[in-house]
Every structure is written in C-alpha cells, then in structure tokens.
Amino acid sequence: MQRHFRLASLSLVAASGLAVGTASAQTMEMVVPFSAGGGTDTVARVFEPGFSEALSRTVVIRNNAGASGTIGAASVAQADADGNTVGYLPIGPVAIQPSLRDTSYDLDSYSYICQTTSTPVFLLQSDEADATSVQDWIDQGGSGRVVYGSSGPGTIPHLAMAAFASEAGMNAVHLPFDGTGTAMNAMAGGEIDLFVDTATVLEANNVTALAVFAPERLEAYPDIPTMAEAGFDLDFSVWQGVFAPAGLDSSQVETLAEACEAATRTDAFADLAEKTNTGVLYRGPEEFESFVRENAEMNAKILEEAGLVN
Image (cartoon, rainbow, N blue to C red; front, side, top):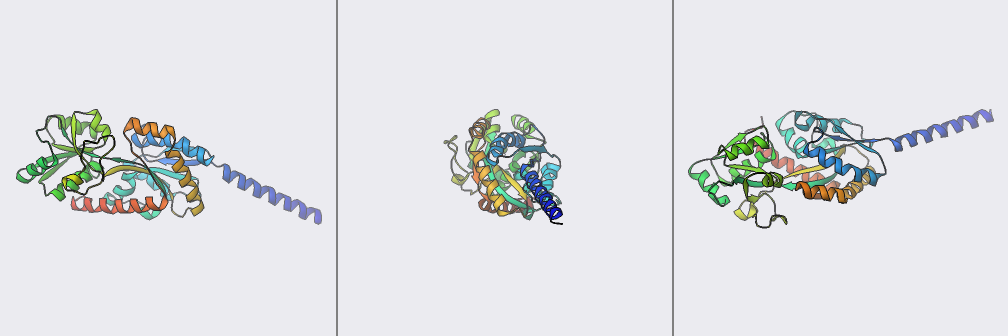
C-alpha cells in the first residue's frame, strides 16, 4: 500500500511539473487586425522581437484582417485571459469602429497593456492653393464652401476635419475616397481643398501643411504651427498599442507592460519610427486605458455630430 501511495504521489508531481512547464513554454500569439505588409503590421513586426526578448518567450504574429480591423480586435477580446494572446491594435478597431457598427466587443472587453506609438496628423492643402493660413480657409468656408477629402468615413482624416469644420463654423463638404492615394490625386486635380494625414503623406506628395493637430509644435517640423495657435484646441493622432483579453491577472499585465516599454526603446523600433515618421509614445496600463476611453468618447461625439452614428 505504501509503495502504491508513493508511486501515485510521484505521478502527480510529474504531471503537475509537466503542466507548469507546458504553460510557461507556450507560444504567445500577437494578433494584428490587418493584412501582412500594411502599416500596422509593419510596426508590429519591428515591435515583436524586442517584446519577445523582454519576455524570454516566443511571440508569433497572426494577421486576422477584415471589417476595418474589427474581426481581429474581436478575436483578442474573445480569447482566454491566460497571458497567451495579445493584440497589436490601432485606434480604428478600438476607438472608432464600435461607434459605427455593431461589434461583439467594447472598451470593457480588454486589459490595457501599453501604448506604443502616436503620430499626429496635419492639415494639408495643395502646393498650388492660394491660401497661406488656416484662417484663409475659415474665411472661405464662411463666405462660400470648402471641400475636404478623407480616406473613408470614420477615419482619422475624416474625424479631424469634421471637428475642425464644426468648431470653425465652416460650410464644409466631406468627399470620402477609398484610400489616401486617390484622395491625393483628387487634391492635385482641384477636386478637394483640404485633407488631413500624417507626415508620411506630407513628404510623399505635392502638398503644404498649414497646421498640426498636436498640443505642441513637432521637433521635426518646428515651422508648422499647431491648430491651437489658430484658435482650435484639437489634438488628433494615429495611435497603436497592445491589448489583452479582459480579466488578465494584474501581475501578468505588469510583466507585459514592462516588456512593451522595453520593446519601444529598442534601436530597431527607433529606426523604424524615424524612417516612417511614426511617433514613439509609451503609456503604461492605467494611463493608456484612460487615454483610450477619453479618445473613444471624443470620437463618438464627432461621429454623431457628423451624422454617422445611427
């Protein structure tokens, strides 16, 4: 009897050790809600090696695209809160799309790990335009009308311009396109007057930046004034961050946040940011959650005023 008890005990210990070992060695999945090769995916793939190294764990990226990123965002929300799944998600699926469509998730569906980037957007006009200031367009929108483009309804270019037009009291018409490229062609042809986008678009096209939607002038563009300098307290940026399913243990959140911060400080991440005009910005769990909730509330209000929320 004593021998059988000892064998049973040893079997239990072995089984327990195997379970723990399997869990600790399990590969972590990082969901990216857009296709491989896109903007979010490109940043995520440079972020991942530093994140993996800091965790001493294998992290594999899985692209789960569709429905403006909401399919991938939903898969993160629906995963087990066991520390084996995170999402590298941008602003759209988290803080915009839930106001535009029925989603199976909301802001309470996540454990907030960290923010990784924040890239301000600029108010752009054609190099051929006669206007020289934000006020020139406000005057035109008061006496006539201004046509502005976007890369689609509910995108950051749309939200930023809608907020500006509303606060300025401009008669502004929104003309959405299926992407930035077609919008830039429309601006070159005189079809639209204004557009909002990042420095990447500014540098790649024949456009002039009249202002930046940021609290302070950017170090890389010290001569471009802020919208606040024109009298409008408007702050819009394209941001990204790491999320996990709601209910993740606080110690795991802390571990992931520390790894996230380490990943944003790698030379590779800094090099990518410089090459793509992406702003690196780390926010920890509590600050990031507060920011996302405030951002989503602001976006929902703008979308409602623009008549896009049912």
